[in-house]
Image (cartoon, rainbow, N blue to C red; front, side, top):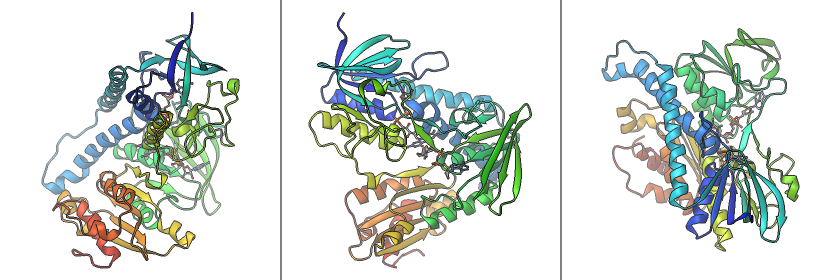
Length: 476
Ligand code: FAD
Ligand code: NAI
């Protein structure tokens, strides 16, 4: 029997893959999407790392733990008395699982709505032929299908420390970190990057004593220095213990937990004894089981699929997007690439502006930024002006009871074009969108300063920071 033939086959159903499939279907293509992720019952769970063990479950637990923290430490300030406060961790985790399931089901619905053929299984290159590429599906669905265009969106996996493989019992990746069955008394994390800070925050709020060991001497090196310093101050106050400039040595895991030998910044030998250890030292592109060799698909030196600026691989009509290629490992970056590739296949001019991809760290305070940091501008020798505005002077922040942090604008010294916006504070994740829009439209700081912002709102701090670029804040 002849293979089923598709215009576009997407391998991987994470945010990159499923969005690429939807956009390709919207453009009139006959599309298949193959994804191997299984839910607890062995059924399909599309949405990838993001939906199953990443963005969505982490934000669900960040929200639940923040509610607990608020009730525990901040409701009293509002005159609200709470008695008998406690945690039902099983229920909290079940809610998180339910949120994940709603997202999985939502994606399956979207596949149906857009008439995308979904295959639950692993997709592997078999061979290239006149009709396109043969992709062998194994798993719940077993067949070989042929696609004229292939979009590889196979994502990434957590990087393990040598000699400390993930067992998801004691030594946890992001997967295990999101389903610890009882709040550990002592929790260790290796790496104070995005996962380290988000997961460290969840479990600290729920009562764990958290220690984070970070190799680099600077905290959040990719973040604007002033913003990173402000965030560090807040985390220190919360009791999140972050050790910088460490060297991690032998890790021993046993019945009583995990012991980590490490050397501090002064070179002194230390030991950290914890109940659980989360290793969050970055992620590696995932090409396991893709059989890239069968068709000669080239990888780069990091093991990522080599692509050009347009996500074209070394092979004609084979594209790759998201975490499996260069660039930031972010769900929205993967999605933008998916849309752009589908449009390029249709002969359109899809594009992704890497200069305006926002970053958000969903801690409390939240940290969000877009564009260049002050240290990057200094290093490049670009003349710039900076303006900051503290949430302390914002009426809405005072009413919320959360005045930590600031908004910071960086603008070209001559043209006033916005070059970067950096926020640490309440709702930074939402506030950053205005900055992204402004930068996409090449706005000047003055443009934002002249726009009417609702009062009282946190976004007034954005307007004031734009005014601060010209040294004319109104409320500070
Ligand atoms: P993935 O989401 O990894 O999806 C790849 C899919 O392909 C998976 O379902 C996988 O099973 C499947 N697959 C792989 N190989 C095959 C094959 N051969 N055949 C069939 N299927 C295959 N990003 C944000 O922007 N915001 C956040 O808040 C955020 N939080 C995060 C929190 C955590 C704890 C983690 C770990 C990550 C977080 N990220 C966040 C990053 C985000 O999850 C990734 O950038 C995003 O998921 C990448 O999307 P993707 O489609 O490239 O790959
Ligand atoms: P990361 O790259 O953010 O941070 C890793 C940290 O580990 C770095 O600070 C690094 O210096 C440190 N490190 C590396 N090797 C080490 C070692 N041997 N000992 C001690 N420290 C070491 O990676 P992370 O946190 O694992 O997250 C992976 C990616 O997932 C992120 O970069 C991001 O792209 C994505 N993500 C995004 C989120 C968001 O958008 N809110 C949330 C979580 C993850």
